[in-house]
Length: 65
Image (cartoon, rainbow, N blue to C red; front, side, top):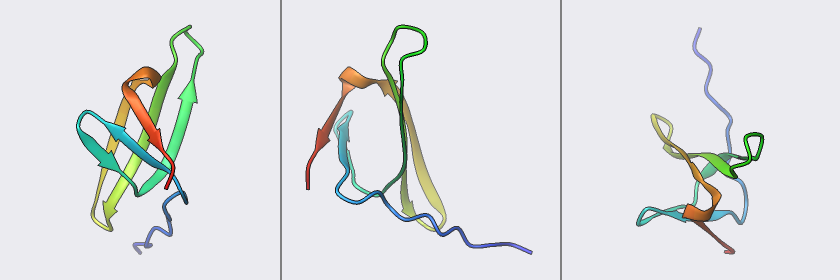
């Protein structure tokens, strides 16, 4: 039996990265365990596809809606 995911985007979170703007982010994480600030986030474009991004924190721009 397949279940539908109930993921909803994080309200008021919009990120610019590498010329793209992501505004349907369902997962966001920042880590600094190795001395480098790293960011991971998942943008769900629709029920069948999503984009996962892993980069340095300095490479993104967080935008308030």
